[in-house]
Image 1: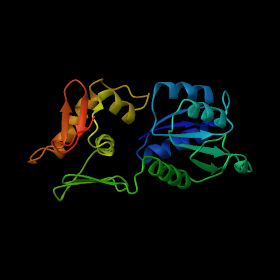
Image 2 (image 1 turned 135 degrees about the vertical axis):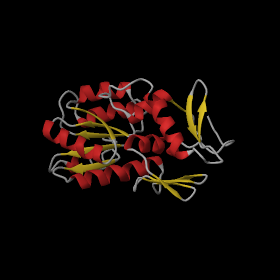
Image 3 (image 1 turned 30 degrees about the horizontal axis):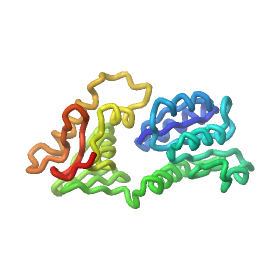
Image 4 (image 1 turned 90 degrees about the vertical axis):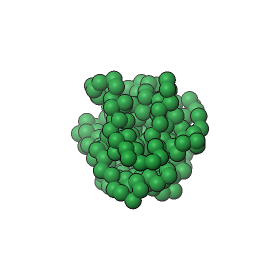
Length: 228
C-alpha cells in the first residue's frame, strides 16, 4: 500500500518514513501542505498521514481540499498536545483517525492498519483465491498447502493483486502503488516481478491464477471469474 506523509519536522518525518517502510508500506513524504497537494494531484494513495500544523496549507486545510475533490482516501490527522479536541468530531476536519503527539511508532502503525481496514472493508487481512492463501499481517503465502517464500516487492505486488481479485490492473497502476517517486529502476520492473511471481505461484500448478490481459495489464483470478 502506498501512503503519503506530510510532516514538517524533518527528524520526525524521516523516523516515520522508516517505521512505515519497515511495516512494508510504500511511502512518499514532504514537509509542507502545498507540496502535499502536488503529490495528491499526481498519485492516488491508499492512505494519508497529515500533521495539523504544517506550512503552506495546514493539515485541516489540505484535508478539506482532498474531500472537496470527492476523494474518500482514509486520512490520519496528527495533532499537537492539547489540540485534539479542536479536531475530533469536527465536520470541517473529515479525518478518519486522529493521533495526538507525542506518540509511539506502534500507536501510529496500529491506527493506520485499523483505519485502512475499516475504509476498505477488510475484516481480516487473510485473502483466498482458489487454493492460494495470503495472510497480509503475517506476510505468509500458501498455495496447495505449500509455503511460498516471497521477497518484499513480490509480496507487495501479490497483496495488491489479491486485494483487487478479478480486477484488471494496468502496469502503471501497479507501479504507482508499489514504488514511490524516488524509484529509479527500469520501466519494465512490473513485468519482471510478475514473472518472478508466476514462477513461484503458478509454475507446476494445474490452475493458473495470474493472468495477462493483453494491452491492459494483469489480473489475479481463477479462470472465468474476471470482472472489469
